Length: 237
Image 1: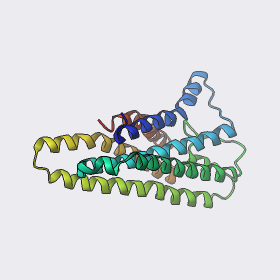
Image 2: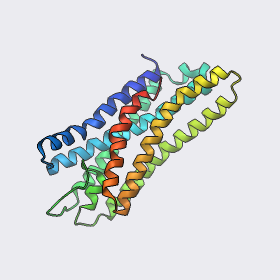
Image 3: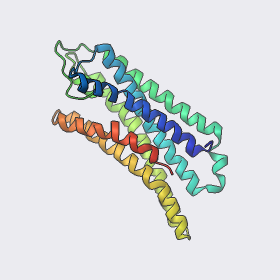
């Protein structure tokens, strides 16, 4: 259990539990009490922790893709490359980047002047929905959302795609059919979890940007806030 694979998997499971805990308990309480009210401080707090654990989840998935790449393409050097120091550093950097990202957007939300009557067409305080409810100028907020999301979404996705392109190349070069099957089965569940996460997140942001179909946006959000975290612990055998 001290191997890098299980080290990242245990941390991913912990982050997934925290990620779902930021939204699901409040949603269940709202359903039980039929009272869909949340305080302003509570909403900002929910935004912060949702972004913190969501981005950390994304970055750990990226690190796990690199871990799969080293394990399959460089098996003899795996223990040397993925040493405890590097694993700890990758995890620490993921948490720091996530904390800075969530803090930035939470502070920028605080500078906005919100309208008197607020109704979020969502089951939790989602960042884009909060920005759209503001009565003041939101250009800077939207700009930072697109830039930071592009960096912390596009770069990890590029890293994942690059890692798997190298993995596919290595698998094709294997002579043993059993070795190919084992290598492929190691990656398929992780890749399916990554695909589900990114497809639903992109879908949510596209529907939010168009200001239409908030019901569809909320349904898609359930996929990456509930379903994907449930599947992530299965991402490595």
